[in-house]
Length: 366
Image (cartoon, rainbow, N blue to C red):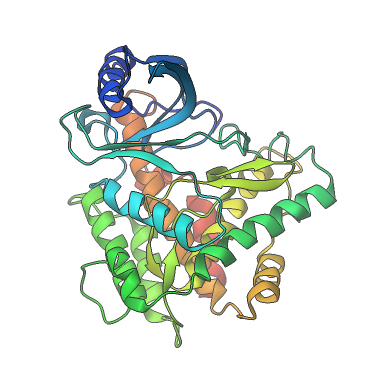
């Protein structure tokens, strides 16, 4: 994971011209707005198309400016990661959390639900200045995170855990969470959450089968948690790279594509497992990594300290997180093959970058 894979086939010049013309109407600009300092997301993100830009325009006789982020689904010929990109769910989740909590979610300035302007729905949010925790190369290899002191890393861990506390702690009537309920068979939010993963897996695999994924699904079904607890609004993609940082404190939370209803443990396990995944990569390259940075016991202890809630069945949920990431990464690898960046391996399980880790995790619980 040292080279950034291709994620789009769009012509950025055409995209910006279309966006500028649309923004002129929204801003009532006296001339066409100028979009400058255009850049991509940097060292993180594989799903939606993201462009950061500075904007200048003139309205009411005054020169104005601002910095924004454009988010839209990838085009269909770019082998998108997900079958649907429901931007209305993302936008509603971001606005809900921003209005109901102190979690630092960027303000969404515009949302265009149709594809009439750019060929796909999109939204534009305010740009927040901060540092990104890199995925490529992984932050555990060498980054500002590895260069941080133990005290600074502890501040990051507590800050990130605090974000989950803030999201999960929104005090609302259960009916307020209906927009993020999945319309799938299942008696509980967790059964519907897992059913959604099965649908996603079926969409990706077609008529093929993949032994390690099938075996993990089977174990999860056989060892279902006895007490799922109350469902909360789940961020869904709770990881360090989806947070902007300043002075080792979180200043913005983004990437809400996987938002939904789930037990608290789903976000906690995703948060812990993604670090474990990167640690496993570092170990493979004989790098020291950050083995004490996001340990499950410390993260869960901090979560309990801040909420009074004791996370349960974390072995189950972390294995579920490993499964979810396996399905996503399988699609990422299929896209790399589509763009000629990789070739099909002899063993289909090797399409999953962490297949060995997943196998070890499965063997440990059998």
